[in-house]
Length: 277
Image (tube, rainbow, N blue to C red; front, side):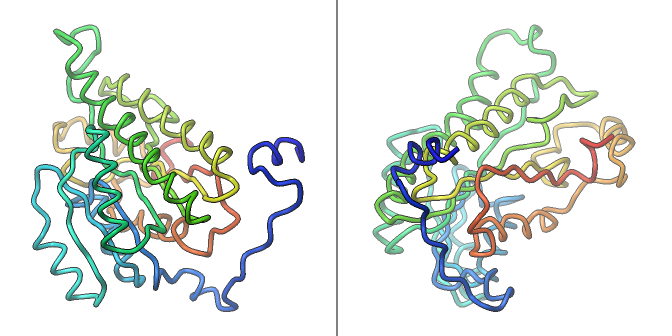
């Protein structure tokens, strides 16, 4: 084990324990920190952005098609923090790198990065799709987009000597959903979970990497299914309902904050018990 740690971190002796606030509530504060969140114009991403603002962070909001300047201004005014919106398609590696560099220049640093942008699979059984377009769309956004973000911001974390990277994975990376058929999405999210664990080892000397796996959450991303399918979902969830995006924010806050300085390579399932049944 010690040899693995030496290879991963480049250290031959233990790293120092960080200086931590004596009060647990102060550990959860994000005051003085800068967070960047992809896919944060609505849904889960917006809930994370607002929670981080409430905790005192300055926040960079990412959007692609849904303009978010007004939302950013409203959050900044309401919580007295700096919030800016950036238009960028996470499937464009060069644009991602340029956007992250722009954010670093305008905010001075990036302490927290949440790779949250994603799209569901809506095409049904894989072999019935007419071409590869749907597969490529989901994998490019959900997996490749997260990789582009991690590669770009990881360099910044290494220069800074610190950082927290959080992937939005899915319970679909742990189980196979029914009744909808979505092999592509399941595979992409399983890839995210293992990618996160792998980066946790690669970055152990300078940053923490974790993932969160939501279950069915009541957002626009799940509006592609009919009510009869949602009824089936509810019957398979021990808690009998979808989650509210705000029910995820505590986990995102934990992983972003100094409360989790000894947590890396972890995936947190928040699914109402679905994966237990």
